Length: 70
Image (tube, rainbow, N blue to C red; front, side, top):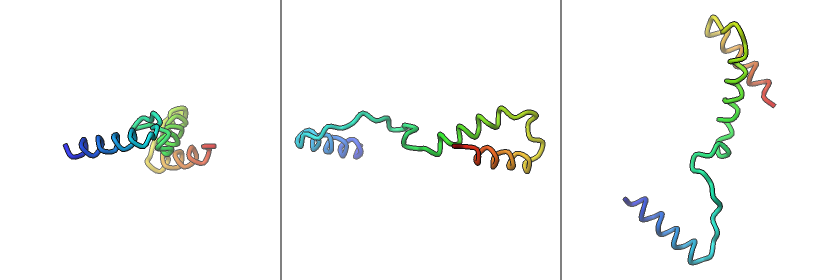
């Protein structure tokens, strides 16, 4: 409930001071670039066949995929 009150106070402040807010998703991937990188790593891992047989082999592939991210 308090968060809603604080949000309204800030909204009123922005309106009163003619501050235009940019539309931005709260969970936008642009705010979390690491998610984009992990997505690229995961995509590369799914393209490798056969699948890793051991945790060590999987880790080697993750490191290789991570290094290949531009």
